[in-house]
Every structure is written in structure tokens, then in C-alpha cells.
Amino acid sequence: MEINHFIGYILAVFVGITLGLIGSGGSILSVPILAYVMGIEPVIATAYSLFVVGTTALIGGIKKAQQQLVDFRKVFLFGIPTVVAVFLTRKFIVPNLPEVIAVTSSFSVKKSVLIMTVFAIVMIAASYRMIRPVKEKERTSNKLNYPAIIAQGVFIGLVAGFVGAGGGFLIIPALVFLAKTPMKIAVGTSLFIVSLQSLIGFLGDIRVDQILDGKLIGIFTVCSIIGVFIGGYLSKKINGENLKTGFGWFVLVMGIYIIVKELFVS
Image (tube, rainbow, N blue to C red; front, side):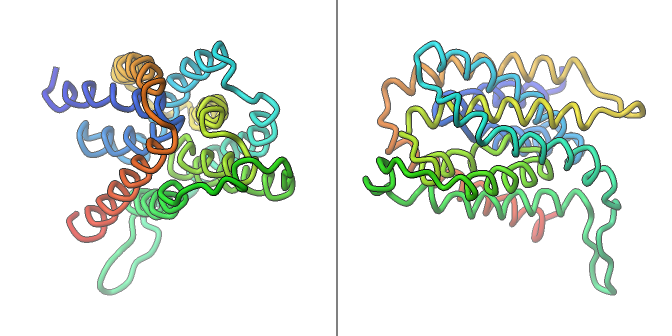
């Protein structure tokens, strides 16, 4: 086994831990690990990420459901528009993007760089609402803005499908602020939504001419599942609000790192 693959599998455990802890963050870790550590081409890395995160989130979601920490009404409310958007994006938009998006006399923008840069920008935008303290009136109000929730679901699906992310780092703020969901239940609900859209997005990726590394995906997924059980255990010990804020800072740092690497270092 190559050393970079071994390191990647170890880091895969942390992919699961973040999903078990916060109901998001799996793709924020898995895409950079697959692309930067294990040397997978970024477009393929986003496809692998969808399977890994989707499977891991499903296992974690089932565990949360057993603890009655999943709001299935909101799973479908967010999930249906999100899943449709993810599938269409992975099936029709991403495959038809040219390898070189734009060319000028001084530089060119490659498809892989565009995907990673968009991923980073969305991470930075999402980090703001994770870091910002949740006001009690935002958390407890029962009034739901259904058009806004559906529109947000479509937006999350488009972004998640484009960058190969589960979208949990967008779903969590949407559940808390738009759907008025307590943080602990938002985590469990997010896991099911992430699972649905990731696995269906992965199915939208499968093509006859595409060769997937089943061994790599399998080992990475198993390591991630081990992590989700660890994260689920740790979530019982850590205050949800503190966890949300801390992870928000982590998302911000990762987003800045990806932008610097893609635009200034590569």
C-alpha cells in the first residue's frame, strides 16, 4: 500500500468523526484528502466523495434515528428538491463542462480548479452562519418559510452536485435558521439528507466509460464509518453550540487553504 493511501485512510476516520459530531463536514474533508493526499483527479475525487459521505451519513443517520434525533418531515421537505438538483447537476451539468473553462493571454481556468475554488467559496460563506451565535428567537420560532426552504434545498443540491459535497455544511445552517430546528436534531436530520443526495448524486455520476477504484472507495468508506461511530459517541459529550462554532472556524480555515492552494500555489 502506498504511503499516501495509508495516510488517506487514517484521515478518512476523521471524515466520519465530523459527520457523527456535527452532521456535516464529510465532503469538506474527503474531497481535499482524496485530491491532495491520495492524488485522485479532482473531478473523480468529487464522485468518490459522494459515495463515501453518502454511505457514512446513512449509517450515522440510522443511529441518530434510533435516538429519536431525526425530524423525517424536514428530511423530505429539504431532501426532495435537494436530491433532484444533485442528480441533474451530476448527470448533465458537470460531465458537459469543458476541461478548460476559460483562456486568456495570461492564464487559463481548468475545470478541476473551478470546482475546488467554488467549493472553497461556498465553505467560507457557510462558515459565517456556523460561527455566528444562534439567537434564541431564531432557534425556537415555529413559523416555517416553506418557499425559502424549498429554494434553499435546490440551491444546496446544485452546489453539492457541482463540488461533490454532501452539503451538510449548508444544510445545518438552513435547518437551524430556516426550519427552526434544535441543533441536536438538525445534526441527525442533516445526516439523512446528506445520505440521500450524496448517494443519488453518485448514481448520476456513473458512466459506462468510467473506471472506479472499488478497493480504494471500499477501504476509505469503512474507515469513515468507524469514524462516524466515534463522532456519535463524542457528540454526547460536547455542547452542540460550542461544536457548531468550532467547526465553523475549521470550515473557514479549510476554505481559505483551498483557495490559496488552487489559485496561488498550484
